[in-house]
Length: 161
Image 1 (cartoon, rainbow, N blue to C red):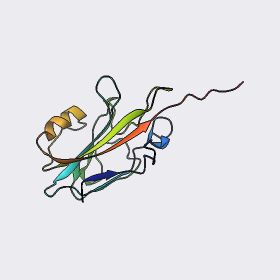
Image 2 (image 1 turned 180 degrees about the vertical axis):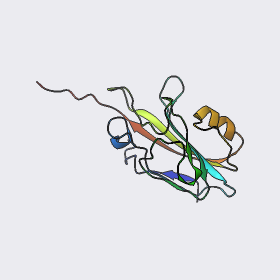
Image 3 (image 1 turned 30 degrees about the vertical axis):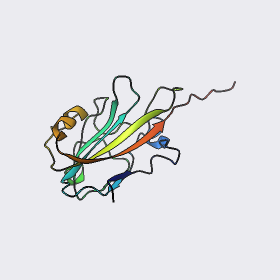
Image 4 (image 1 turned 135 degrees about the horizontal axis):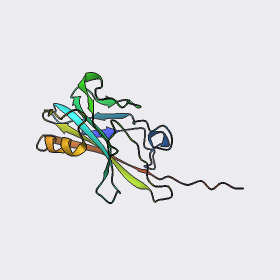
């Protein structure tokens, strides 16, 4: 079995359900994974925009996920510490927790990547770590990655009248 990340937040056409975007609830999506490599001590996760000209915009940073956890529920609140010692970092808005896709209205569909890292040891990032800090700390610790890519497009609705 290969390392795989799954979610119901992206439909069969590859688009995010609006509940997980700035247009409705902006709730974090449910994520499930399996098949991590032997020797995995734990996991870290980064979700980011792939079509932003400045090299990506970070939507979610989660780390210190123990190796016996294989699920993040929907709607995780913006708090530092979660059950099982899991931590959330700062997103691109410099806010704690998840911030969903929110491209400009009437732009083409934008791509979003959710990447889960299987780590051979869990580093000790600072509280409210940012993605770049986490990536530096896990450099050399990554055994495998599992990705999900989804699309989202906001459409301006014309009102008659």
